[in-house]
Image 1 (cartoon, rainbow, N blue to C red):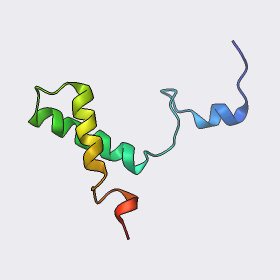
Image 2: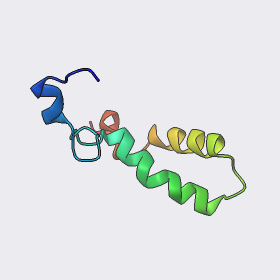
Image 3: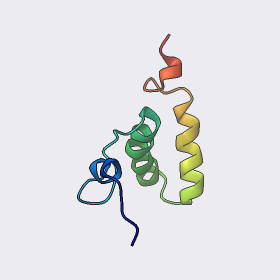
Image 4: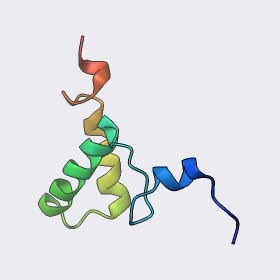
Length: 67
């Protein structure tokens, strides 16, 4: 097993994931995707994800829309 530097060890949590906060896009997708799947259960995951991503374009959470 390769040795990890102190910097790499410090960046990981107990679960092995980084401590970085979610990006606005990832936070939006995490919140909206379950809503779309609940409202339209017949959609495949891929289609639900596409629909959610298209909603991101006009979402108020999108930093590009804050002018």
